[in-house]
Image 1 (cartoon, rainbow, N blue to C red):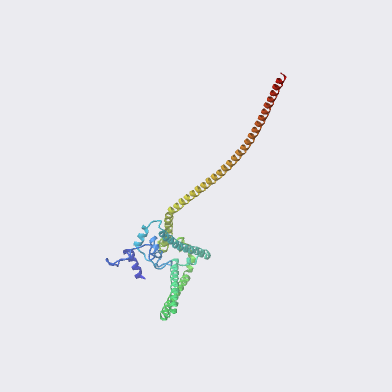
Image 2: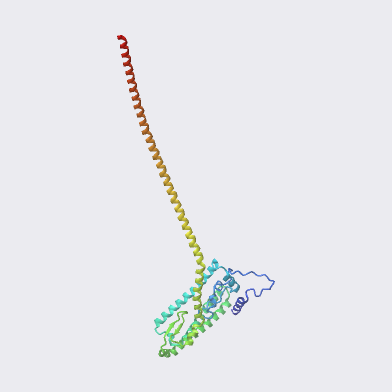
Amino acid sequence: MAVLAAAQLLDELMGRHRNIAPNENFRSTDWEDPEYCKFFMVKFCPHDLFVNTRADLGPCSKTHDEEARKLFQEAKKAHFRKIQYQEDFIRFCTSMLTEVERKIVKGKQRLALSGKSVLASTNPQQAEKNQEKIDILNERINDLEREAEEAGTDGNVEQAQGLMKLCDQLKEEREALRKSEIGQLNLTAQLAVEQEKQMEVCEVCGAFLIVGDAQQRIDDHLMGKQHMGYMRLKKAVEEITAIIMESKEPRKFVREKDGDRMRRRERDVERTRDKERERSRSGQREIKNRDEERERDHERGRDFETRDTKHRERDRDHERRHRSDREDRHRHHHHHHHSHRHRR
């Protein structure tokens, strides 16, 4: 574990290629390579915040590389994978903050139920340290039992026995801590009743604090690894969220601009369709009007033809009557002339 931590520290300071000869070829750094810790590149790796505390996440399985981080920081803000890494960082940190929020709520409920907390009757820092040790031992015991079971299943009997022996030793250590804590509680119970110290829960990390405690102890708590770690988580989530919003804003503007352009295009198409429909209706009305005008012209033509026919017939009648009168006058003149000659 110590060797791995030292190697990782050297990698961060000197780069992963520190042991490669000058004439030896090596693969260039690509920050998108999954071997690199995305959280380390975005801001910091949460695994480094709570080492050797109750919130310890254990060592990070990814590589922390300064060159990869530099390349990541130099990449474009709107780079899809970069935003994805930042969002993953926020999700992970938020889950840790949600967990500590639950711890704070539980702590407050515990104080509310017990009135003056049992922790007030003893040294709260010592009690918390004992509880931290017991929790760590519980985790180790569970891990060892699981490893022993796997070794037994694989047929490694000696390894399984060795693991169970170590597990028994840790159980004895845990029992001794519990007895020590109970003894300390019994010894200081009367003192606690006399002092009647009131407890409160830290709103940042969920630790139990004595109200009105000595300033030195308050300062020690505020500068402690857990308290500082959760403060960094909260601040980092706010900062990275702002960066993501800023990165996505241009794309949002482009989307809105595209949306406006699309809506304008749809309105133009609709207006064109309306004009075409109006032109079509106007054309139909014009055709109808022309047909009606033609029909009226036809009717007028028929009326004119009828009137013309009547005029012609009237003229013919008038001509016939005029000719008949002329013939009658001629006959009358001829008869008169003939009679006159006959008398002579």
